[in-house]
Length: 333
Ligand SMILES: [Zn+2]
Image (cartoon, rainbow, N blue to C red; front, side):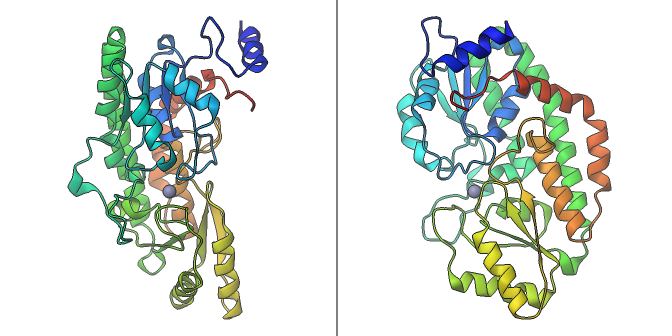
């Protein structure tokens, strides 16, 4: 059976007559898809995630196979707030009666959103970096799923009651780990500005070379400013991101070295994409734990709160991993 599915998957990227390539639910990023998978029973059908690990959602364009998946799915969840900027029009078009395309961030109160001072008047889309804010996507997912698949309504509600306390615990553990970093070293420097919500929630200042999207090249002035900051603070490390080119950061480390200091380039942090399935950062919970662990341990803080959380949530983590492994891979991979 497994072999048969695999073979039919490899044979053609077009949907066949029996519709075996059709996903019941489509999610754009891994952060969205992972929570959806947590909430859904295996017999609901496939949950397909469009944007692969390590791929930048700001720049992602839907492939032909993605278009077919989106228009065939019963339900589409995307992150929203223009994160998937090059797919906004697609989701508007795909949103039809009985086959909705829903931005999971729609219930986040306007006053909770951060508007960067970049002249675009658009909210920062990286809300999943604050676990408390990302928790507010769960009712949107449960609402959308319950409408589309009323037969599983009880299951969705039960799973949400498991998921929400888990996210609360994750939120506290990340906060405790960040609070344990000595004040002088509590500064997070990254490639692009994905950490504004993380910074606000977990009280760690952040600086980045690029703005909230990866659309532009970092400028010399930005790099110089960061170099001075690292030298002044004698910061031990700056952080790469799994889905963003680290050219700008490498220019920073060279600049620091030219001034007679040393700074380590550490990473990756998972900001806009999960890690590979089956790895520590392959789930939303795992991604947040991996990030907090790397930041805390590199900057002189404690990882004890994260270790305790990981031990306790082992059974849930396994569940998520099992659900994920059912997903068939994208054609052509
Ligand atoms: Zn981003």
